[in-house]
Image (cartoon, rainbow, N blue to C red; front, side):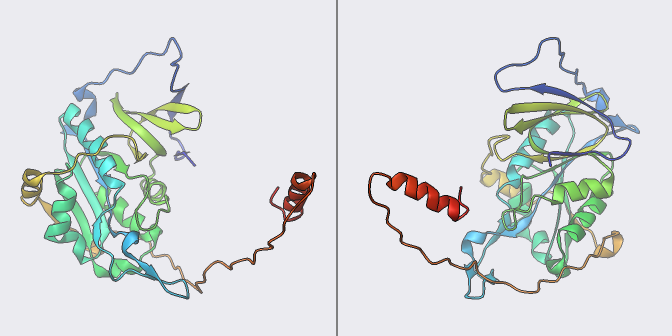
Length: 294
């Protein structure tokens, strides 16, 4: 699913491809004055995840994943969203606010520097070890609650997916709780009037979408080159504000998810069939069809 729109939402779609832009379509004009809400500049929010890298995990005979040796860091796809948000914020003269939900480690000095050195100005986080048992729905409800604490929030950017689960459902869940539209595979974002113009990557090229009002956008992995933070960025990040928000201050949705079992895929025995003769190719095709492979 590439776009979700709440009831009553409105948007205009301009279709194009990577080689040709239809004639007669004027790009919307963007000015800083269009991004003023109740006298305050709108804020750009980036939802990021402080997660363990699955490359450091091991899997036992039952299929259970051991994360004990995995090192945590900002999810590798999130810096792209931060870079898109930073570039956009600089052009509009506004700030970038990071939001995250995780265990106590998400508020640690290391996590703070690792995230804010990427280009965010400040952060709001839920740092509670109880979140380790939360599923995507509960996490998204908490993230939506954090969005509600940012004055003038009008754009939420996320990475393409999280490095540990790669489910790609949290952006749409956040949008659902906020009642905002959500778009995925976004490669660029521009301010347009009281809304946004988003360009999405599609199988046939690109699609440009104009959205009136706030929006959630999941950024494609190749949307922008990621800047590697230097020592100056890391030291500066240590001085940026990070606010811890207690779970009790948020209206989270508690949904039950019970894992009833884990198992590795069953390995199928090789048939080791050999096909010879002039019709060997035909025999192979017939065997594949009989096996349901064709």
